[in-house]
Amino acid sequence: MAREDINITPSDRGNMIRVGIIGGSGYTGLELMRILLSHPEVEITAVTSRRFAGRRLGDVFPHLMHLTDLKFEDVSLESISNRADIVFTAVPHTRAMEYVPEILRRGCRVIDLSADYRLNTRVYEKVYGVKHRDPGRRAVYGLCELHPDVRDADLVANPGCYPTGAILAAAPLVRAEVVDRVIFDAKSGISGAGAEPTNTSHFPNLAENIKPYRITTHRHHAEMTQELRELDPARIGFTPHVIPAIRGILTTAHILLRKPVEPDEVEAIFDGFYDDKPFVRVGGIPDLASVRGSNFCDIGFELEEGSDRLVVISAIDNLVKGASGQAVQNMNLMFGLDERMGLMVPGLFP
Ligand SMILES: NC(=O)c1ccc[n+]([C@@H]2O[C@H](COP(=O)([O-])OP(=O)(O)OC[C@H]3O[C@@H](n4cnc5c(N)ncnc54)[C@H](OP(=O)(O)O)[C@@H]3O)[C@@H](O)[C@H]2O)c1
Image (cartoon, helix red, strand yellow):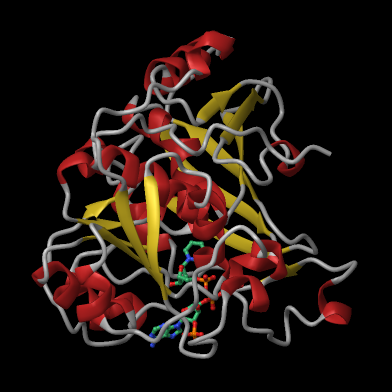
């Protein structure tokens, strides 16, 4: 991308977009704050935290000190909806569906970062083992590289972090019908599990350690099969691991090919698919350090000589392209802005 390509033209909207955040004290809510505080066309009008209601954000989270005068507030859907054009729900799954119908009814658009609207109701209830409180509601799956119709959506279901890295690595090849089977081996930093401490996140258990979990049964498999629908679900494998890092997901996709391909064919497939997609960078060997803190998904690949295996690696920051950055990218599209606005920053290297 040339330097002049990162000049982003301001919109002629006139008004700022008024944003409310429900779940502002969690990792994705705080990441929304970090990104949106310097977004040129956004005014944050409400941020909730039940635990910290009434306290200034900067008093509770010093990295926000002197950057905002906002105070956390309790969840009042009426009050938040009156002050917002769009509300981000950055709360645990099963909680978002308690709020989303009412916010929409009050005329706000919603980007839900939880899993509540990513799958159809039947699949959701099976995978998450709960009854959906808002069954059948239509949402657009917010992986905008695959779903440009987020532009017209009132409700966007922001993708899961693992599915974002996995689907972006494999979708172009699956669509090009060269894939027989794919196995995603993914490693995630611990912030993927949210701000609540757990036995796994306890320092002595995590440091100098790598922990596989839900080896063949992780819920995010359902999103991967939904979005890579050309492949039978049984031909998509996924094994996640937690690594002693704070941010980032590195996914190694072992792709078993249906037919032989040459490296330049693979390159052409990726280039064709991501040509006009500013946050997917194809080339080189991706690593976490290059994307940490940024909205980029870096993708690289290598064909194994004399075999049917193509190895594709993707790297994202789970809190940015895997959550809040992607949510802001979707918001930009929903409000007719350049999708890069507020997001075009490099990773925190080193
Ligand atoms: N972490 C990631 O990398 C990541 C990536 C993609 C998607 N997600 C999804 O994004 C959502 C948020 O994740 P997170 O990691 O930010 O979680 P988190 O760190 O645990 O934060 C959860 C937030 O929700 C609030 N909350 C909890 N229950 C609530 C309720 N019933 N009503 C209102 N607010 C409530 C909490 O604040 P108070 O208790 O103070 O109100 C807190 O601000 C989850 O659904 C998660 O699966 C996370």
